[in-house]
Image 1 (cartoon, rainbow, N blue to C red):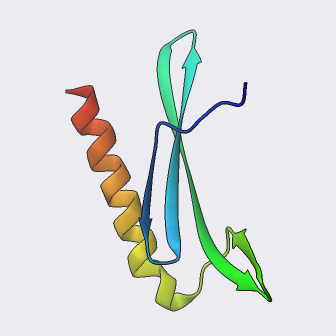
Image 2 (cartoon, rainbow, N blue to C red; image 1 turned 90 degrees about the vertical axis):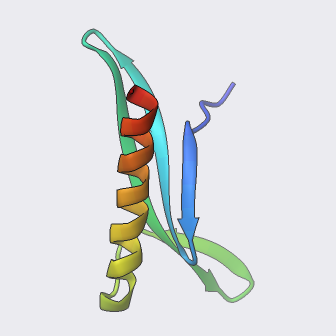
Length: 73
């Protein structure tokens, strides 16, 4: 069975997907940030961001950070 993300935050075309990993030192989380775009009729994603994407990149990262620390409390 494929591993599922813990949660996803999406604002417009920018999304952050949070993955949980169990290690010898305890639970760790990794965050994957991507930009969605349409190539013809097909949706694709990229890890490259333009200048105008950066405010949303910062916001989804901030929301992921807040949620991870909120879940740890």
